[in-house]
Image 1 (cartoon, rainbow, N blue to C red):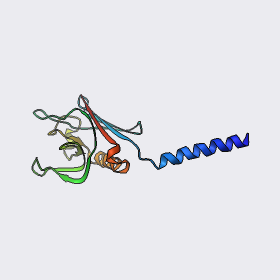
Image 2 (image 1 turned 180 degrees about the vertical axis):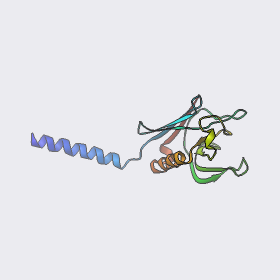
Image 3 (image 1 turned 60 degrees about the vertical axis):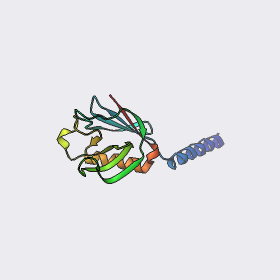
Image 4 (image 1 turned 90 degrees about the horizontal axis):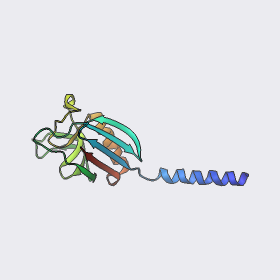
Length: 142
């Protein structure tokens, strides 16, 4: 019995140690209708935040993408050098990034990007960097 217990504990320890060395999977699910972003890590919901997506006349694309670029102090080339701190790009020029227009969070307000409170954008940016952009998925739905 003791040998069985030791074997089970050794197997359990091995499994735990194997997982510690692996990067996790981050999924950001943006719901345009609700103006929310839910972030999961390895399938567990970690955060739910208010966002702002495209206002009238602009579009936030729907679909699923892997993040491909992280830029801590990004500035828009298209919109008058506008600040886009903690930007995680997922589809061409579209990114999840911080905004300082906090009163508009929870309502459409952007040119198409997904805007977050700066504290939340910093958290998401850190998760994407820690787990790798290739392990960071952005899913946008209506």
